[in-house]
Image (cartoon, rainbow, N blue to C red; front, side):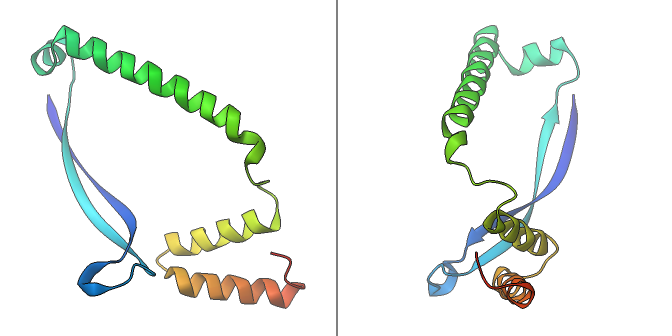
Amino acid sequence: MKQNTEKAKATVKDFSEGKDGSTEVTVDYEFSYDILENSEELAQKFSPADVLKLANQRIKQTANSSARQKATSKYAIDPSSPAAVRDRMIKDMVSQGIPQDVATKQIDALLASVKPATV
C-alpha cells in the first residue's frame, strides 16, 4: 500500500467574518489517501461484505447518474447558445485566477462591444 497526496481547489460562497455570501472564494487544500496495490491489501482494508456493499453502491450510483442525465438532457442548455458560451468564457477566466465579478464584467463588456446584448 502506498500513500498519495494531492492538491485541489474548492470554490465556495464566502460567509466568513460576517460576510453575506454574495462573493465566492477559491480555497486551496491538500488531502492524502492510501492506494491499494493488491488483493491482500484490499482484504486488510475491507471485509468481503464491505467490498460487496461498495460495489453495489457504485453500480447504483452509475445507474442513477445515467438515468438522471437521460431524463434531464432535454432541459439542458444548448452548449453553443450565447448564454452557454458566455458562462464558459467566464468559468475559463475564473479558472485562470481572475475573480468572478471581474471576469463577468469583462466578458459582458466584450460581448456588448461585438454585438447587441442577447444574453
